[in-house]
Length: 130
Length: 135
Image (cartoon, rainbow over all chains, first blue to last red; front, side, top):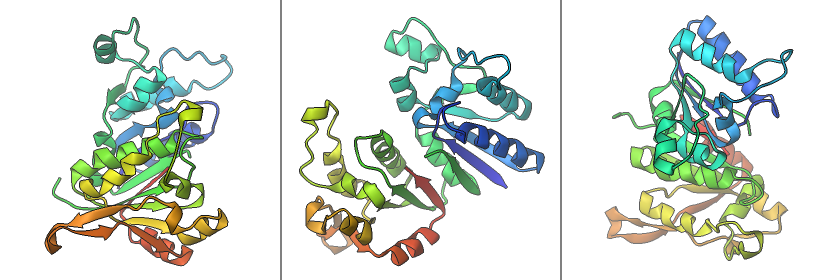
């Protein structure tokens, strides 16, 4: 089955990002295809490479990057949500005159159309978080 | 993308305490360009999103409620409101914005977009959908 996953909560405060990760991993192990993972609302905070959790804790951001790279998954941060919350890639830094970037490898910033397209193209859209 | 799916946006939260209502509306507006069969549902505190006369001057936030009136122009004209959620909050249909759309097939006759439904009817509407977004 072809899946699009939407994640609406940031890392660490809520379990949603963890649950979504384990769901994605399990779905891939079962042979399902992940068309896209779309991060919305505070979910965009899953895509900052500047996170530094304690060494004995899970690194949620790196975990996403590794999963995406291992399975060639398209991971998208909503541009409007990202701009509000300070998630920046090279293009956004240039467009909005920011002095730094913080997007983690494997993530890209794009529009809400990518979420709608995910809903259209996939057999199921699965939403994690409030 | 020639396939048309039934898209439903479920709105359950009050408009300004969290960003979900506004970021839901942003998805609806962007999604309108994809020519899918779109419905919106408002239940629980989500019914407050549609109340008329919103004034956000005291909280320093943008009043985005006028945007709902534009939904008809985006061919978003199936807006289901849970009657019980209204009643539980002391609201009636008269407390909500009068949302309308123009029916091209009937000489642009103005029609109501809001449909008051019971919880059982809402469950049926939700069960018919292909894609559900929850906000």
